[in-house]
Image 1 (cartoon, rainbow, N blue to C red):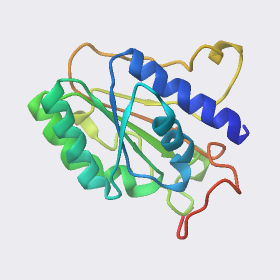
Image 2 (image 1 turned 135 degrees about the vertical axis):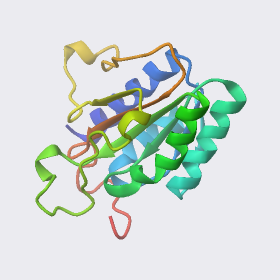
Image 3 (image 1 turned 60 degrees about the vertical axis):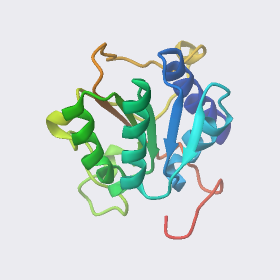
Length: 180
């Protein structure tokens, strides 16, 4: 997937979330989540906050959800970044506050072999996530022309998590901050 379609895929994913009511994105940027970050900033129906520290971002999103009753979407990069959301996810679940997490994870084939910035994010939030979906590597085909598929919506206000391996979400040469 090229950078244009990675951006389009990310934009349509966020568009599907805004159509479901999401109004606020809280982004902890990293190289793997670049298309999601840019798409969130570009989306006309999203208010986007940039918070570098993932733990702080998680609690900021929790506050947005508490105040509005509408889930904020948290966006982060691969590796342990998403693990920093756990305290806020626990609080959200125990308080009945809605929350959505998008993690730009690395490809499944890089798990368990010592690849940098790679952890197994499956069930990372355990029973605190009402729904988890590993979207796989973003793909664009005729069925995605209107929007990527977003399944598993739940009418109950609880944290949800989706992760997609981002080997092609961030092809070499777009943005590579030092240390990523």
